[in-house]
Structure formats: C-alpha cells, structure tokens
Image (cartoon, rainbow, N blue to C red; front, side, top):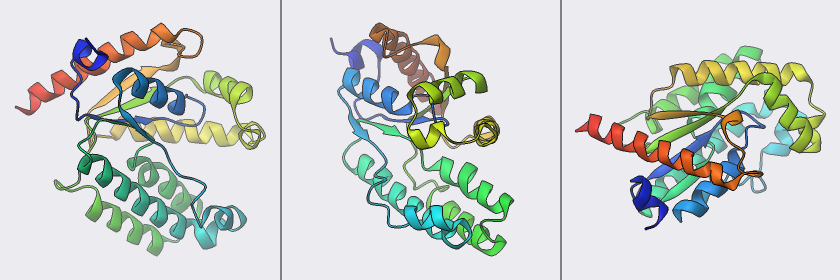
Length: 222
C-alpha cells in the first residue's frame, strides 16, 4: 500500500505549502512529493525579468513584479489542474496579494492606483468559482525566534544579512494573513513538531494529518 492509499490522500490532490522565509517550505514540498509520488511545483525565480530591476527601484517596478508573479502563478495553477492534479506546490498565489502587494502599498512603494488595479485583477482572476483552488493549504508556522534561528543557520547569505526588523514585520504580516485566509482549507503545522532533515519518519504524522483533513473537508462539501 502506498502513502496515498494509507492516508486517504486523493491521487488528484493539489497541496500548497505556505509560510514565511525560514520555515522550510521547499523541504516540506520535496518530502511530501517523494512520499506521495506527486510532482512538485517550485517558483522559477531565475526567469523573472523584473526581479533585478525591482531590487534597484521598488517604487518603479513593484507593480510590474507583482503582475508578473500573478500571471505566472495563475498559469502554473491552471497547468497543475489540467495535468490532473497530484502536485505539491511551494508557495501560493494568495500570498502575493495578501502580503507582498499589500506591504508595498502600505509602505508607499506601490501607488494607490496601481494597488487598486492589481487587486482588481487578482479578484477577477483568482477569487472566482472558476479558479482551481488547492485541495489544501499547509501553513508552516513558528515563533519569530525559531524562524530567525533557522534563517541564521540555513538561510541564503542575503537572508542572513537582512535586518531583524524585516523578519519581525514579515512574521506579523504572515500571521495576520493566515488568520483571515479562507480561499481553501488550511492545515497549520508548527515547525517545532517535526524535523524532516534529522528525523525523516516525522513525515508520517504529517501525512496522516493531511489525509484526515482532506477527508473531513470533502465530507463537509457534500
């Protein structure tokens, strides 16, 4: 019996992993995909034509960057469902508008007109009955101290050099976002409850929770 059958996870499920930097989204994506024999969907940062420009001038390029992300994630979401599901996705389409575009608007690096245009576009594309929302969003959470410790130990050099105030703000923005998120079912996992690197068997309770959660939400829809 494979892991999908053992834990009652549908073959066509699309499971999205969300959370701030340092919580281990990529590791979780990879491990779940391996155990469920699902495909992975990772963000293609290298092909982004706006990223370098954005870091040099936030105000000029924030709108372009967010629209590019929205288009790429929309196409990827469509592709996964057209393929028949069976995917683990690293980062959701919802975080772009709920966290990053909102942050640029509130900090003044995206104009009110651009922000309104972007959010209107997002609502028209994503927040409709026709958009294929994930079967489940797995939100990885932890205390600010735990997350910063992980970034210092395992993060990229750019992340390790980022001021603490930025990680404090991102941590709070993610918590605010997930507390009001309702586009699809959410399973919250605390990063201290497992260690997929040192203890590979800690994936089993996670798979059990995912299977149980998907089955419960399926029953509620009927």
